[in-house]
Image (cartoon, rainbow, N blue to C red):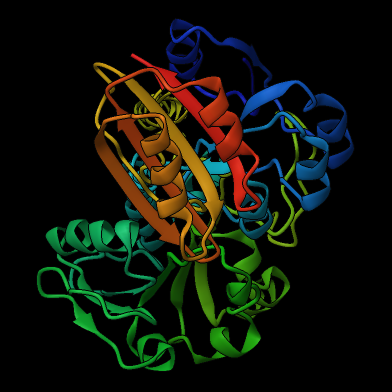
Length: 399
């Protein structure tokens, strides 16, 4: 099977997949929709990061594609609904770079509070500006976290250890960590926070949720950080509030439009502003995080192909069967309607097959069942299951 990895994915992913017997091609940049349509026929597994977008047109052209690995946290760059319809499994790394993102945000909070971007710029220009004007400790300040998931909660813990008071807002019920306080609304958080840090996901409903109205409700001379998704923030509105002095500083690691490849030009209305930190989507880009992500996602792709495991898939029903040590296995993705499991078992019973294990999950319109039997399964039985009107795909394995 051919594997295509884009966006300079860590070499450990290449090593993991090549050791499993796959032919791996690694490219340093992302690909456009047209380029993907041309490149994906013949590719069984695709690895991407956040800059490559998988559209229905791409999925229609990728006739051999069985799985996509998102070597990052987010999966909004993939049309998950259409991927599920096509039976393409999608995996990501929801936890692997959490610490890296949190450490960047902590560094940005301190840097903005001390106005380090301006200080270092003047030093490079040969100006000695030894002044405490506008420089503050973070101890005793209030950090408002919008989105209290994996990153938000770990940020909460580290921030509290630094002496920050932590408040948070999330649309879902979340268990608070330490002394953090849950706020009843986003407006209530904005009115109290000295620093606002966004950690929401990339669902379409979050597009443009932070604009002029929200910046107006922030405390005068507060700080703003976005290490979540570029499309969440109106950067033109942020520019105006920084220029007016209402927002004292900002740090952004993600942007509505990002360059496709290393070295491409970057444009933003926030360029050139005082006390603004702009980083090129490197929140999770530490060597430790990228290695862990490479190992984790490549392992999920390998387990999917070699064992039929869909554990932690974001679009297909999650089934994690044990390693196959003897006999045979049938992995069967099907339309989720009554009677399919009985159909599978009837076909196997007619073969005289002894079922040693069966693992089933459903998700929306799809069902997935993995069945282990003690004997080899005949081609006739597999063909009968394949011919069912409920079949999306079927794969068999032998110990």
